[in-house]
Image 1 (cartoon, helix red, strand yellow):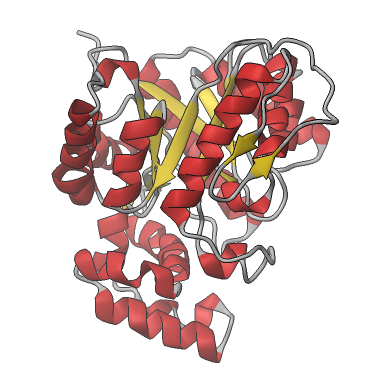
Image 2 (image 1 turned 120 degrees about the vertical axis):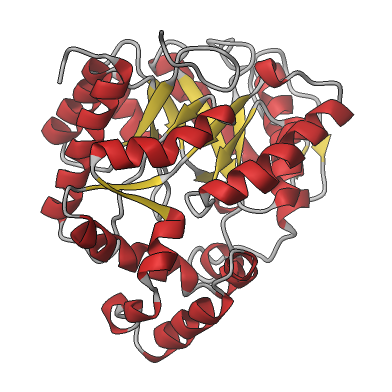
Length: 353
C-alpha cells in the first residue's frame, strides 16, 4: 500500500539547489528530477534565489521551482513580482514564490534596509504582488500600502502572465507567521528549526485553526516542512557534523525565545555570547549538546531517519530534507546531499538512483 501525505496524496519530496557552476547546477537539477523529487528550492542568503532556478528550468521539464526563500524586505514588491513572473514564463508554469521576513540583524544589518514590522510588511508585500500580478498586463491602478506605494503612471503594459496566479508560500518560525500564511497565502514553509514535536503540537493546530477561521480547506493549501537531515550510518559523526548548523541559529538573539520554548534557552544564550566573542562557529558549538542536535536534526541511518520523520507526514504535503551545512567542507555537504537523494529515491520508488 502506497504511503500518503496529510491530504491523502502520494508523499512528495523537494530538494535544495545551491548556486554552482553551470555544468554542476544543471546536472544536480536533472538528478533531482530523475530521482523523483517534485521540486527544488533555491535559498537567499545574499543573492537573489531566482537566478539558480531560472538556470535549472532550462534543463528540466517537470521539476517545480520555488524560492526558499526570497527575503521580502530586500527588494521592492514590484521587482519580486516581475522576477517570479519571469521565472514562471521561463519554466512554463513551474514557479512558486516562497517569501519570508528573515531577521532584522540580516535585513537591516546586512542588506541595510529600514526596520520593519515583519507581519505587516509581509501582508503588504503579498497584497502588492497580487495587485501587480493581476494588473500589469492590463494597466496598473495605483497601489498604496503600509510599506509600498506606487502610482505606476510611467509603466507600460506587460505581456500577460504565463499563469494568472502563481502560488505564494510564506515561511514561518513562530505561530503568528503560521497564522498569517493560513490567512493570505497558498501555503506555509516550515522553518528547519521546527522540531518534530513542535510541528505536531503547535504549528499544525494553529494552522488548521486559522484556515477554519477564514473558511479555507486544508486540501487547497500546501504545507512544506523542511527537516534537517544528516543521514550517516555513523550516528556520532552525523551529530557532530550537524552541531555547527544548530549552533549558528542558536547564536542569533532573535531566535532565543524559540529555543527557550524548546528547552534550550541557556544553550542559545551561550552561543550568543560565543559569537560576540568570536565569529568562528567552532569556538562555541560545544554549547550545543547531542540532545539539542537530535531535537532539531534527524540523524542516523536511512531507516532511523525515515522513522523519525514519519510523524511529519500527518502534517505535510511534502518534505524538503535539508543537510547540515555550517562549518562543513563542501565535499561533506555533497555527501549528505547524495544520501538524501538516495533516501528520496527509495522512499518515492524512483528507479533513477
